[in-house]
Length: 200
Length: 381
Image (cartoon, rainbow over all chains, first blue to last red):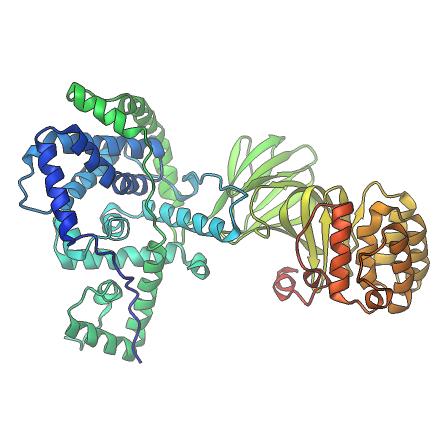
């Protein structure tokens, strides 16, 4: 008898040669001031950046939009500094993490679980869809309550689909530390949301 | 390496991030070690929850602002300057809010609570009165006196107004079930959600929302009356269920059963006789049925439809004859079949009644004529 892994198949979006070369071409064009290339780069990563900002700051759409804007303005104005010593996404997510942490320090933002606004879900939604959405919102609220050093590995793993090594590169720590923080983060989520275990 | 436990590998094992040989050894250890296995199960549950995180679409308004900033250099955008005063205000508020947050979040698991607003007087949660807004946590009682009223937000799906002299408790709030208990008093609910997500327990039955607005009253003896103003509500107790449409009401009696739904504009004789049929002794049922059948209007077909399954077989023919006079059954529905409670025939006739007098409640007659609803029964005190 084997204990099943729970690893879901990961999309092979990284390591796809044609996507890598598109990214480099786009980056090179951005470095030359090509606004269309900058827009392409924005369109490629905007949802990921916005999602990270939303989850890390407790679900405030205005703040998430503001963070996303800050990240891309910084990205575009500093893109000439990117020399390719690391993966572009490592550089990007490091920027996202640091921008979110800066914002949190400035606002000293804590969001109690009960105060995370849960937008009204249409009564026209099928029941299963409604339940799925509400569960997602509960998980989002619980994640935003985690300590930052436990929250970031969770977000980078599940929102950005990064490997342990990539997460370690973004956060500037070892793979072992990433594993340890994910362990603690997973357990914290399990304890916070234990009463919803029948929904997953 | 594995003479010690393997808990530190739990997440990496879940994510298939371990080298093959280590992976194999962890798997073998988990099979043999209950404590590591329990730790792994907890991590695995956390992984399942974390997998619910989804990408959120960024609004379209962001790029034009970025483009404008890039155009003009390092000037901050309207979005940022709009957020800045908000951030400053948030900082000031968080001097107070931060302490409350720490207090609220020192215990596990995370508390679920509903927002409550005072409408009149000084409602109480537990023994604490409040004048503005408060939170009603799972297990807590909300009480109103003769002069107070409150409004409770039911998660994100609607709200409940708690009338004077009422006692209400939050029992459960999760994606598949939001449940209150009304011990006594009166509440009015307006719910906008898919059906079967909001429930109210009373001492004599459970009201299950099917997409609706309604008022529910419980007296000091634990008996209740449901009045539906929009949509449908199901009232349940053990193996009996009554689905109540808009404009209709239904009573329950503690220790007896759920009554039969009736439209509130039925004659007073009709309603009084129906009450005697539902809740008085066996000897009262036959004369009560006679009054009901005599007073019934075409609009009362829904009541008669329920009575088909609630009268003795010897009386069923009389109910059928009355129904057939008021609204002839559809083709294929026979007197003999209805008397035998043929479910397909009953279902066909129900649909005809719906089309004539009431909005659809869209479920099979099998659900209404009901087997024991064990889940509901467990919830009843």
